[in-house]
Structure formats: structure tokens, C-alpha cells
Length: 78
Image 1: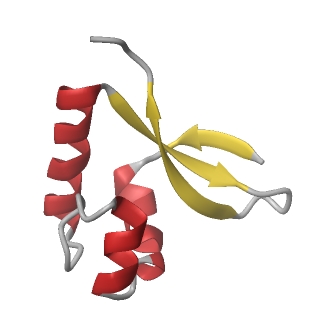
Image 2: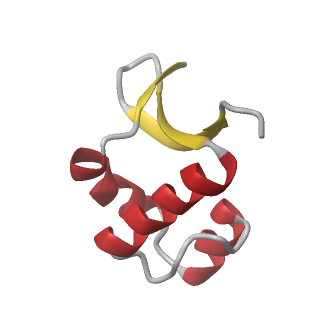
């Protein structure tokens, strides 16, 4: 598995497909991400996570070079 930076303009649609219902969203984001997922609201959520915790979104890429998940990386200590 490889990690790469999440690119909102490119990756949002795939994330939205993975999180197809409210239950999946709650389990995936611990009920933190807005549902239903909308592009601007999700961008605001990611910005807030960075501002509050220093979290950076990364996409997981599998051996076949297909994106297979989103990972929030905590990178700075406050």
C-alpha cells in the first residue's frame, strides 16, 4: 500500500461513492463528516480537521495503483 496526498478536486467523487449511506458515513468518520456528502461541506470538514488537529488527508493506493481508502494523518503536535 502507498499513501498519496488527497486532492479534493480529483478524489471527492470516489470518496462520495464509498460512503453511500448514513450508516457507512457514521462508521467511516465516527460521525464527524457531514452527511449527505457535498463537495464544499466535505472540503470545509477537512479544513476544520487540519485547523483543529493538524490532520492531513491521504489516499491509500493498493498494489494495482487503485485508490482504496482515505486516511487522516495526524502530523503535528499541539
